[in-house]
Image 1: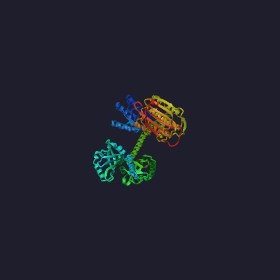
Image 2: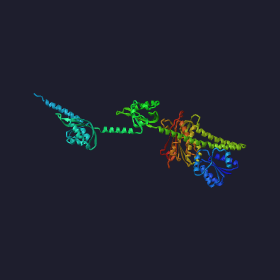
Image 3: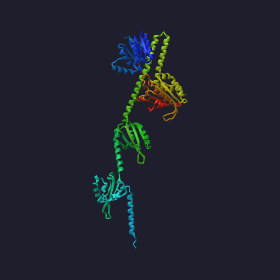
Length: 116
Length: 515
């Protein structure tokens, strides 16, 4: 699977990419929503795993932008803070239903999720 | 041989008459006389002053000249009584000045009799009571204001005996005026606060006013209410304190709202803390979880495992840092040392050189390089560093930081010698609605990078050193920016820190002005 991992904390994006690559996925780490949208157009990923609260474009805006060009791409959001629930409620009101996983995520569970 | 006695008799009579005339002329009351037809026959100096007519003008004129038209009917009544030999005393009425102005007067009219005892006229003494009337009206007006006030207003004498009690006081305390006037004020003071009354009375005796004294009072039914008292001494005409007037405002509801607000604020702080802690702890945990997974996966490759563990330990330090800060364990355990303030700040600024450069931030230094203080160097460095990083974060698109180190005295009374360190940025400024919160824990406007602890910790450090911290900010289109100013005393004094910090709307300041 081609996967883009977005997190403003490089250590999180990098370790996730390392884990995904170990399972045979083709993964790419970026640290801004803007670059995720750009790369998504180039590599046409099967899935995007993104943090929610980030400077600049947040995870939900990033997800919406990617879904517009890649409707089939799977979006998995993950977040460490409660502030993201407000953003999600707002997205739901606009008709977007995103699944958000809470940090820290057990890597085995994340891999399991990608298989389904 | 007859002695010229009659001449002497006449001169005695003449003397007496002259004496009388002199008394009448110098009397402060207007004195006039009229005949039984109401024609004025005499008119003293005070009458001239009071009515504006000279004796020359008015003698021979009817007395109705000085009586308002609508009261002309009174005159036959007065003359009737006089004819009957009666005296009229302190008759309050209105007379009219030559210029038409009405005068409140009190009249005393006595019949004048000839040697045979026939009434031939009337002498009247007219006293101007306009001022007295005005005072009476003012007193009535004041009484009406007091009576209709929404605040409870009462007065007491210097023995604490209640002497007046308005309607709002009746409503607030449940006692009617007639049942409480004459009673000691202690009946509305809770027993454990009776000593307050001694303090209040002694202040009042000294002529001092007590303003917005918040305390507890007891209603007739025993319910306790929170009140704000303003008590003023009541003085007599000679300036002697004869009692006290108090205004009692029921603040029970206000207090309840205050407490609710404080709880809300605490909840908000707790909410901010939860969000911050969640972010600051869950992110490192996410990284550590991944690193542990990778270490297990790559167990045979010791180099890799060592790298993962190194990263994991750094992330764990981050968690430790946030818990130390939030739980208040950020302490410099070393003892205070003497150090040069400008040098310390210069070393610190060096650490941020790369960030200044990448943000295109110009740094201007204005140091008094000789100032040394004794303080907990690590904590002070932390405090300065928080201000510098805030300034950097406030200017993502470049700007100027001005750092000043100056000799100074404490602003707030103690006049302790020390140093003032000022860090000014030309960022967009702090919105007015946020200014009062900047020193609150977990308050941040930097949702991406802030923990909301920097200024809170800084304030804690400054107060521990018995210093003060102030903030000014402007968000104008042309003049904007924020300046933090810390005062630290030269000598380190252990003991309880005091809480004295202030935020205020900036006066006009700009980088130009500041440099």
